[in-house]
Length: 207
Image 1 (cartoon, rainbow, N blue to C red):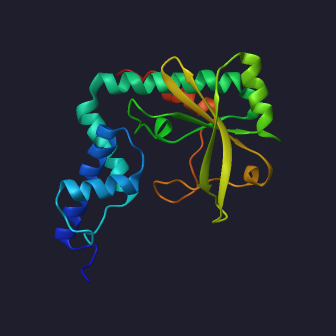
Image 2 (image 1 turned 30 degrees about the horizontal axis):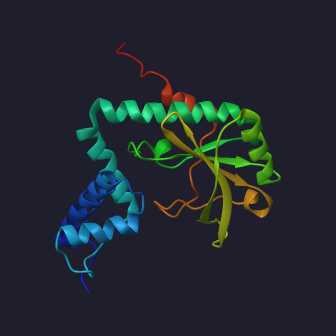
Image 3 (image 1 turned 180 degrees about the horizontal axis):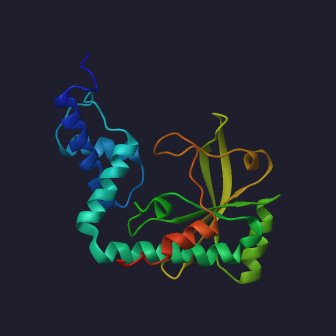
């Protein structure tokens, strides 16, 4: 079997990472496995071809957006992060945390703003949605937790203007564990309001 360090394999993996990134951006999908399969098809490569890691694809996404996204992508990302901040204020009682592509900066215009909330019961978050008069729908995500087990985490989805937002509610035993990131399999990065506000702060000008 060829080594993952083989220069030809590395070049193929880099090509696949770039193509998978284009698949995700063009199709508005966030499923890394599906993007890899489609990239293999687009490049006419056999199924046994060495595949890039999810982290490599995310890096290709960031690079692709930096080169081709321009002001439009930066503006949309700012809108998504502003929507996150607004929702975090409204649901401050549930210690909200921003996660996913909107936090990492790899989000495209179709991405959902995902917040993790913490409550004794999901109904508490729904009562808050009702108090605010926000039309919403019930959602659920199956997440792999730091214990190695999969848990079904309930949530609620709604639109903030044209930006989709999902609130996932961690209660009971799910409250005690952190989900694993689909990108690198490590504990998912979660950002509190102060960190998200820092992401929105203007970059300092030249001294």
